[in-house]
Amino acid sequence: MEQFRYQIGLEEDEERLDKWMSLTLSDLSRSYIQKCIKDHQVFVNHIPRKASYRLKVDDEIIFQIPEAVQPAIEAENIPLSILYEDQDLLVVDKPKGMVVHPAPGHYSGTLVNAVMYHCKDQLSGINGVLRPGIVHRIDRDTTGSVIVCKNDLAHNSIAEQLKEHTINRRYRAIVHGVILQDEGVVNAPIGRDPKNRKKMALNEQNGKTAVTHYQVLKRFKDFTYVECRLETGRTHQIRVHMDSIGHPLLGDEVYGSRKSPYRLCGQTLHAMIIGFRHPATGQYMEITSPLPEYFEHLLQILE
Image 1 (cartoon, rainbow, N blue to C red):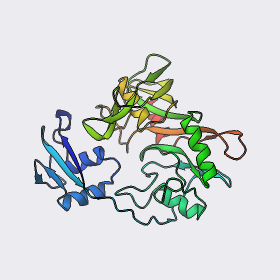
Image 2: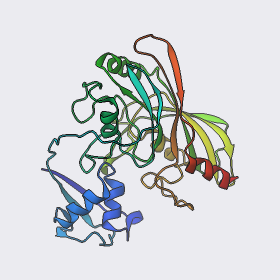
Image 3: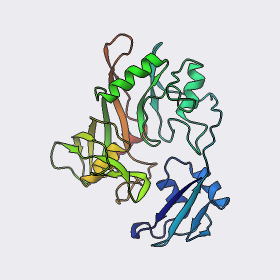
């Protein structure tokens, strides 16, 4: 059984235990975390606490993470917004709040459950039973384009393009503050945050190369609308990089310390454009995912 330890800092003082865990252990659902708290698997200063417990500076959290049991993943009739599909792959417009593939606390309602129903047995098996067809992912609260591969040939081709950094991935984001320069590049390695294993951080010593290009699309009074192009694809790359230059994403409750004045469910980040060579034809194709309604509405408010 894996043990997670963490010491609460000043900025986390008075946070509810269950909310803090949901933000910190973002791969686990809130309901799963609450069950673990109820089952006395979460300790604060070696004492099991209730979900509503208010954390205090220097509190030590100890979480006994149960051993992963590989469940049978079932196909579910979940509506999909399909941007493109052929015999080799499909590009899905993932909604906010949907996890890409099953993980502890998220064994149903994921994109994988949905595409299993849609594609039946026509999905690549390279990534195993928990991630059939999945060659890349985006965060739960990030919306937009995800490629799903129907066979191993397509999977290997897309995976190789990802490795070579030849896939064109352009995101739209709203960040805190006004970015003065019209464009820029953040070139800084990203790795696990040594203080919190569930977060990523700039990590010169143990991180992997990460490069994000950004361009200002529009400036508002207190925010900036930007396009971010990924040269690499590290976990939480845009979120970490934009926070590192003092412009965290609006709505991001994990990175950056600025609070959102709007009621949002996670970061304002949308995977808008994905371009790649088709695995079978070799022809370059580019798929665009329209901005979700909440994002468009927010831009109107900021005007």
